[in-house]
Amino acid sequence: MKQTRGRPKACDEDEALALAMNYFWEHGYDNASLDKLLPAMGIKKSSFYHTFKSKEELFSRALHLYREETQKEFIALRDEMGAKNALIMIVEFTMQELQDTGKVKGCLLVSSGQECYNKYPHLSQQVGQEFLYFLKLFEETIQMAQTKGEIKNTLVAKRLAGRYISALNGLLVTIQAGAPKEVLDDLMENIKEILE
Amino acid sequence: MKQTRGRPKACDEDEALALAMNYFWEHGYDNASLDKLLPAMGIKKSSFYHTFKSKEELFSRALHLYREETQKEFIALRDEMGAKNALIMIVEFTMQELQDTGKVKGCLLVSSGQECYNKYPHLSQQVGQEFLYFLKLFEETIQMAQTKGEIKNTLVAKRLAGRYISALNGLLVTIQAGAPKEVLDDLMENIKEILE
DNA sequence: CTATTTTTGAACTAAATAGTACATAAAGCC
DNA sequence: GGCTTTATGTACTATTTAGTTCAAAAATAG
Image 1: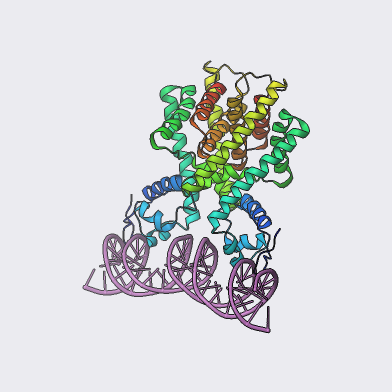
Image 2 (image 1 turned 90 degrees about the horizontal axis):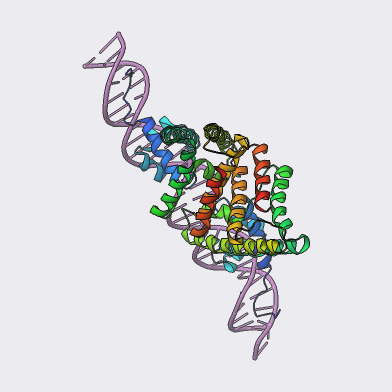
């Protein structure tokens, strides 16, 4: 990278953004105050406002990064273990996380969708857009699984994708509402049935 | 009611609580600042702190009231139109609300579950308790519908109740994530299939 | 070396937050 | 009527919030 004039940046913008994304993911948007967020990002306030325009702008970029990264990871998983298995793996990772840590981070888009719904129309709109990419990715994945015969259900892939993603969101919300384990185990089984 | 000594209350505690519950339902807990909440409740700050211990205590009572009221309304609906129809009606009310207002208020317990999950462990725990009452109510309702033959599915009512409530939550979250109408319509159909 | 450009550190600001203090108002009791 | 008790209105407080200001630091260009 070409070195320009002026004092060189001490902070790595991409790294700071990635750290912010993780902090938002764990704590939500409003609950991630700058006083807590900045130490987590490893930068000081002046550098922050010099690099990012505002907290809202940072969050917007974090949402975008989250979508890109998560999709990249999912595609890697799909390449590795096949379409249907990858879809099932998402559910199993979630249940494993719950068992290991007693909580789930869930999906940044889903929790942001809830948090921004009444308060930040602009962010809420962006959540909607990013969400469509997940729908498309899952549709494409289910299509692959149907073609390979991994999924027998002949319902059009788009509809199955909607059902899958909604069942996944339902599971996450039901976990966070504090439902007992037996209910959650049944929901997991139910999601797998969508993919039969 | 017996009049005690001292200046009589100008505000009706039950009414103020009901108004608070509705405001929380529409705006969430954190987003309902006292400065906005108090006018909505129709009382002044001094009366508020005299009547309710704190904002958290008020919210806790609002959660409780929400559960009681919502269940009462559901049971009335069930008495009026039968178990299965009442379960379907919840979904249709939601879709109608979306069509009429462009938004959904959703379920106070579900959104509070999300909001309190990382921030207010005590409230989060209460959400979990109240949530169990809904599970039980739906289980009982599905049991009724099975007995009457309205629901043919022989899966044990408790499991169907979990699936129903999770599908409902999935629908709400998917709405708030901004999914397109065709996806939502299919989810509605999917919920009805659970009750076949 | 000096001027210019960009980044950073520390202190500050304005607004919003939940909650308090205290005097005053309005009732019953004797 | 005066004393006690309870409710209310006004003003205040301490903390937290996102965001700004401005001088000092650190690099390059000439």
